[in-house]
Image (cartoon, rainbow, N blue to C red; front, side):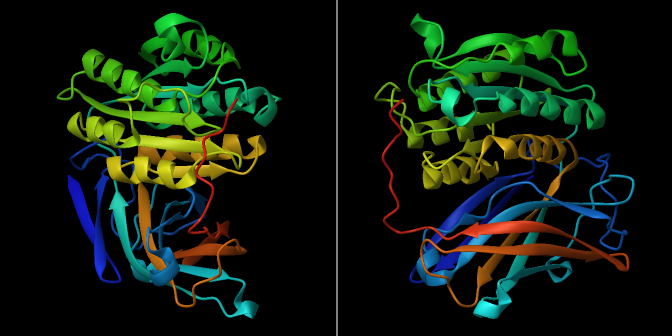
Length: 349
């Protein structure tokens, strides 16, 4: 099922197209707890708050959360069951406008894992925590959707055409860790950041390898910088158009301050995916794990707005709280308020 929402942005409006995880239809056998009154034990924050283009005037943002029961099952909730608290002493308040439940699809999940292998990775992730995070993502899929398939690819390494799409391991059962884990161990650091050409190759390979009628297809992309080495035709808009034409949502994890956040938010939200930002490599395992949980079980997409819009550049710490079945659970969240004139230059490796 495809859901379209329109958010008013002053005199203008934008339409966000949100895919139901990697699917266009609901899964009646998903592990979600039915209804909205199941007891909630924990809350996992799946993505970073994604600010609307008109945030400076409307204060609107969206974010993905995963409430869970004590058994680990996904709990769908409504807007009245979600609340935010942020630096209340400074007078900031958030109103929840809408919650959309995204559920996984029926059939086999096929995920293309697209890793940044540019030279800057040696500085942004010197302990190679992306390796641990990638393996944990696969473990999440194996636990909830053992029939899932995944491939491991990297850009910025090797030479020739492989520089844009170096396939360490093609689509393989997530249960075959003997094949997939060594592929993740092979991730490297060299070259620049041909993110968009790599994503085009990733989408094309996924589409030509797995049939849309038989598989739930999606991409998980990871980068620590902005695109700076793609073919001229491989623009952000072209990649979004291709992903939508092939019905393949792109989920993105960005690392560090060099990523062009607004572009990655647009890439994820415009194709039906979720964007998550890690301030350091230490956060990668939790974010990759949350992505795996959301793709395999489902998540709630929350749309909310600040009643008083914080100034650009302000960092606010708070919590998101979910109440269901007579119990409540919460998780920490940080708001890094964007600047209209934020740097958009790509990182030069």
